[in-house]
Structure formats: C-alpha cells, structure tokens
Image (spheres, rainbow over the protein chains, first blue to last red):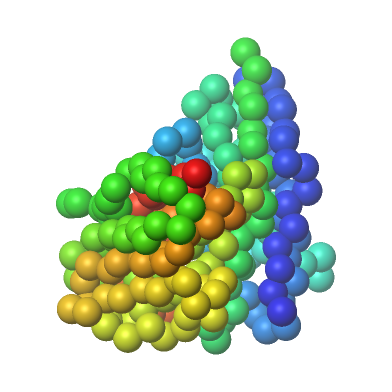
Length: 113
Length: 115
C-alpha cells in the first residue's frame, strides 16, 4: 500500500531563508510524486511533479524537489522564502500503474518578516 | 479559461438529512476525482470517473455515499443520512485524461457542516 509522510506539521522560516519541507513515501512500484500548495480559501494548486527522467524537478514560484529513490524521499526546497510563500503544502504519491492519489497530512509554512 | 467549480461553497445541514454536492470540471477533461479533506489532514481519495463510469469507488467510506456523472461532465456527490463525522471539505478535481502522470486541477471545495 502507498503512503506519504510529511515530517513537521508546521515549519517556520524567516523571509529570505531556505525553505525545506520534507516528504517520504512508500510505494511498491515506481511512483509519480507531486507537491501541491493550498493558500487560504483557495483550491489546491500543483507546484511540481516527478514522473520520469530527471530527478531534480523545478516548479513554479522558485520551488524545486529532488526524487531520491534510495531514500524514498521527495523533499521540497526554495532557496529564499518570501512572505507570499506562507501556505499549506501537500506531498502526494500515485502508482505508475494506477490513478488513486495518496496525500500526506500537509505542512503549514510560516514566513516571518 | 474556467477552472473547476464546485457548488455550493458552503453547506450546513442537520444530522440525518440528504445532501448533494456538485462539481463542474474543466471543459474537455475526461477524468474526474472526488476527495474529502478533514481538518488538519490531507485530501483523502473517494472516487474517480473516466467519462461516465466510476473507475474506482474504493474510497467511498460506506453506502451512504454515492456519486454520479451521467453525461461525462458534471458530477454530483450524494450523501444520505448525514452524520456529524461527514463534516469536511469535499474537493473535486479533473484531468485531461485518466493517466498516472496527468495533472489534476482542483476546485475550491464545498465545506460541509453537519449539525
């Protein structure tokens, strides 16, 4: 069975600091991996996704994530946090042979001025 | 272009009542998904459709929940005999086709409160 673990339900960084949101997954087959962002009172928006090929994936708003098979991880990073990055972030996994998406519990990012 | 829309945005009902939640996917999207998001949790898969047929309804919690998509576009999630534990945000998403790598586009959700 697939599962997703996001380490840290809340992460707080200062504006301009590195953002690191951790995600580990469990999957019996090669996965597709996703990061979504949810701003208050808005729907989930795709930040980036890994399907095949290059393991370092670049997304919108300066975010990127690296698929590390040996560590079963897909951590999300951004070199310099902006106040507008404050939101909830969800990591998700889907089997390459399936269509059901499993989401993590989410990490709320706070950005301090 | 228009995104995924969901109506109503908020629904308050009493325990035991019947509710219907509507989802309008992006035009041309053949795949449609329903999720439920409880407070402090990530979205939980309920059901997905390819065209008019439910391809996988294994996430529906029990037989009080049912979803239809009769013409392959708009979908309705129906909940009978609502319980307080059904209170959550119900999310709908659509994608161009039913394929693992396809991007799902989410609507803003319907917030259901069962009193």
